[in-house]
Image 1 (cartoon, helix red, strand yellow):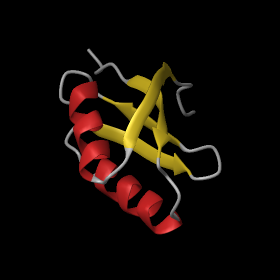
Image 2 (image 1 turned 180 degrees about the vertical axis):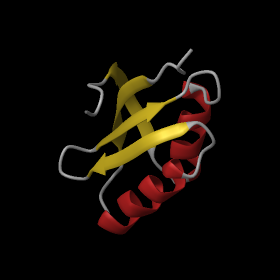
Image 3 (image 1 turned 120 degrees about the vertical axis):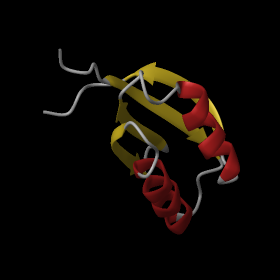
Image 4 (image 1 turned 120 degrees about the horizontal axis):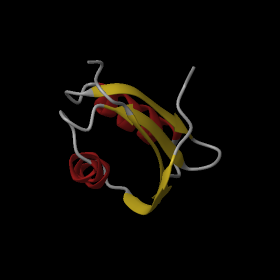
Length: 81
């Protein structure tokens, strides 16, 4: 049975630096269970796809906080094709 993938768009507060966006994206991609992670600097969103059996939304939120950003909202995201 194939692992399920959860897709979310995490809206960020305090994202005002492209270097910070790149650091968050790189760190998110290294989380166990993360399938894809992309920060859209212009919209202030982190788009993620992950295996919910290996990674939790709370773990992603912790990573965001550790990078000095805040989570404004979490919404279902479109899955990459």
